[in-house]
Length: 160
Image (cartoon, rainbow, N blue to C red; front, side):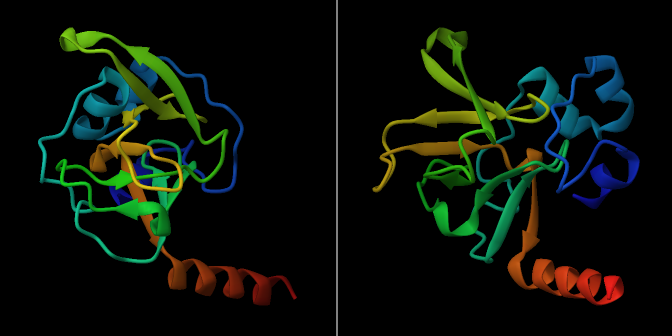
């Protein structure tokens, strides 16, 4: 989601400092589709995410702030129409909250850094956790493992 990163001065894949901004501030820097889901708790249509069937190896980040959320080796095909994972990168990468909208009782998941709505978690996932994090692809950013390694090596070389 390069369009998000270029206009967003708060996007960082290394800074884990919590972000506290008004929805109006987010509206100014996020693309409309990202803002709708991340800040207004919208939902993208099922089967429309570029990440739904992706088998690429790497890390999924919050498209709003760059916080690491999921590793590709925890992604699985759930058949629900949205990218699904069974475990977040860390205990602090995700925040959980009650969602009792639409006549249902669900557990909402938000980004641990910027509190953007990501999707929901259900208890019908595979081992080892038994959880299914059903995530809107619009609020995901992805970096291939090889790209990350190349970038790391280039930065290391530049620092020598």
